[in-house]
Image (tube, rainbow, N blue to C red; front, side):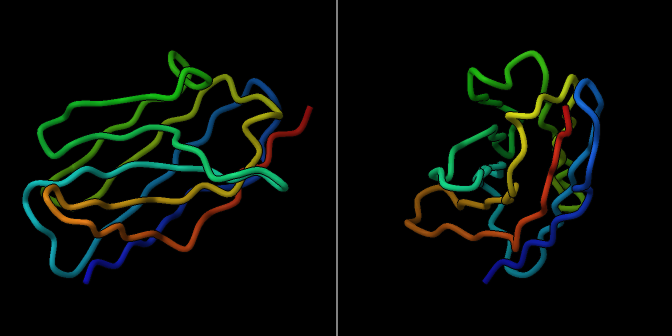
Length: 117
């Protein structure tokens, strides 16, 4: 089992920045991908960004050039630096952990990000 604890959400004005963190604990396989997804009210959960244990990143087109995902493998922690935030970025952001070669997905409890116009 893997436990994920997110932090860093909040309320920010449009154009502002926030940094999300997600710390993993438990049985952490070495080869994995960590990432962030988000879900706005009335919408499906969508991928925001992912990063593998070797540092390969992937971003949704809507956040590319504004958001940066990074990770600290020594602390099993993934970060999401969000700049130039827009009201449409408002959502609950969920941390995700997926061990390669497995059908498993672990999720954090979610953290609210609200961007006011």
